[in-house]
Amino acid sequence: MITTARVELQTQGNAHILNITRSVADEVRQSGINSGIVTVFCPGATGGVTTIEFEEGAVRDFRRLFDEIAAPDRAYAHNALAGDGNGHSHVRAALLGPSLTVPFVDGKLILGTWQEIIFVDFDNRPRQRSIVLQIMGE
Amino acid sequence: MITTARVELQTQGNAHILNITRSVADEVRQSGINSGIVTVFCPGATGGVTTIEFEEGAVRDFRRLFDEIAAPDRAYAHNALAGDGNGHSHVRAALLGPSLTVPFVDGKLILGTWQEIIFVDFDNRPRQRSIVLQIMGE
Amino acid sequence: MITTARVELQTQGNAHILNITRSVADEVRQSGINSGIVTVFCPGATGGVTTIEFEEGAVRDFRRLFDEIAAPDRAYAHNALAGDGNGHSHVRAALLGPSLTVPFVDGKLILGTWQEIIFVDFDNRPRQRSIVLQIMGE
Image (cartoon, chains in turn purple, yellow, brown):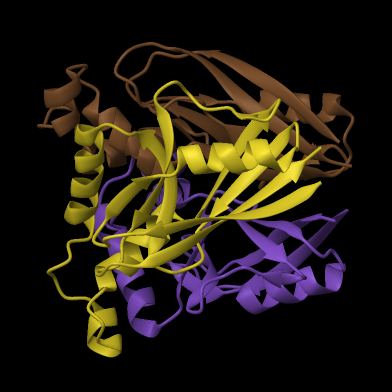
């Protein structure tokens, strides 16, 4: 069985990190599929998906990591060629990756106690995002 | 068909890297599923999964990379707020990611000759880990 | 339903980035599977898979990121022990990861307008690569 669902988000951009665990868990439960995997996927070249302990400090530390390895205010070839000023957004998103796969059993996501699914919007402006959940199993 | 299996690990923490290829391959073969994918997932916010040539040097180099981009002994907002001293563990795990998907055909993982599946325990203390294998196919 | 396909590539190595979106989309359409996921997997310990806006500038910026966090011309334990000079290739590939999962519906990949699937060959020499596509769905 396969169900395709969406999580609609309004983000602030600039490495805004949103906790989407509840939405993913709800869609998995409502799919009626007992056991399987959910692929969480960001359509778009400036967003990424992963998990983290969604605690204010860890979230801030994670954003700092990207500020350090791909600072917004340095020169990017993308900015010179495409002119939209989000060169840092592109390399960050490509590094983190747009897909995450989470297993579930008995309709419940298998996550650690403090582990939350996050979407990171690396773009340099607020965005409307429609994250895809492909839920597969039996 | 879907089978859920577990790989139980006792780690030393502090970026201890464990080769779990044999366990994953065994579970895939024993599932009786011929062709499909296995999702290797770490439940927990301080572990990551990927592949590497499991050679002492490459493993050491990989650990150094994390020491450089997320050093343990600098200031982390997580440490100030949560007080458990593993701020570096959280950003490392979120960057590497908790999930890996490996295809298999005829009951055998499709891996390169020198490519091994590893679990990295970024936490700052020894941990008991139960890695989830969601095996799907037909 | 499951179909296993391959994308054959001739790369230049040294972080050569190849756009494989068209090949993946063709194989998904030709599989006859309507809705599901395709796992794009690199068998081999020196390659990685992700998505990016495949624009010359962004591609160059992404390569620079790896030159900065894992420079080719510094000391690597792998080079000292294995002697093949591609220590940087191994840590880069392990960080980026060998697998990507992309959902599709009605035989079409769900990607953003500017989002392309890329293979990055981090090895330090030209390589023949056979990227695996495991297409699953119904």
